[in-house]
Image 1 (cartoon, helix red, strand yellow):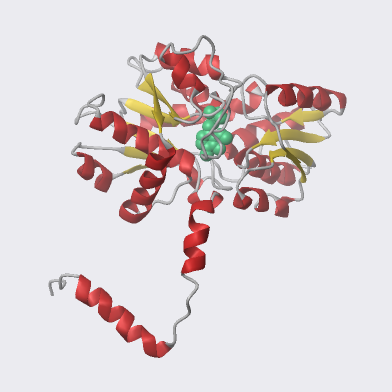
Image 2 (image 1 turned 135 degrees about the horizontal axis):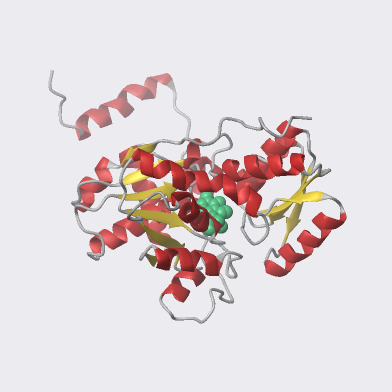
Length: 345
Ligand SMILES: Cc1ncc(COP(=O)(O)O)c(C=O)c1O
């Protein structure tokens, strides 16, 4: 079994990238993205898993048990395997196939669940205690030691650039709280924190707008995986962090998330999962509405890789299943010639 001090797969210290085509399109000077998809299993949850499993080793837990819509489960599985700790993962049954399949190689016991709300998480907490397993849920309410790993996102950002606004894709709210804590007190003027949620599942945004008295709603209609939490475990903490930074909430219809995902892939060469594209779509909305000014320096936390959720592309892949012979290639390439202006020699 690994010692508790050196459990790492190379997570963290992700770069920030400029999104110049998007900035040009929107008529502003700069837009940035923090490349969290570059973490070892393709999402920022690796940072939380490194800290969670390290804590499990410190406390001599026999293994770990967690809940996940996919990303957290892949991360806990990888770090658990490296530490020699067996894992039990209660995974949302409707999670994207890619997220579920990519957990299988690590040997985690997968337990697909039709419901994964606060009641289920509370019950799983009890089981974790009973069986001496580390509770590996990615929320402060259940696993503050693990969430400390995500605070590093907030402490890295100020050394990378002086951002004015940080756009955080939010489901349970823990990521936003972690970033707020990581920014900490070393800054004189905090960047504003913007809580970005899908319009079809926006309890924290509604609460910030004082449309509801508590950040919880009955139903979620959004298809953005990772952000489908109508009763977010860290919702209130996230709203407090936003208010303290004098930030705000921004909700985005799923169609705008899909078109931003397409823009980022086609014009920036960056294929992120929908939750990440949503944060960039929120920046775009706030620029168009005048809430952000052309000289602001916003950054979106691009939390996960596009390879994690390919559902939108499966029908396109099928309709492209035609095969070509070598003799067809010239005419295909000639079409490109016809459609493009000649490059200067
Ligand atoms: C890709 C992605 N982005 C953002 C989030 C939101 O994090 P939180 O639930 O802590 O708000 C998640 C959570 O699962 C996620 O998977």
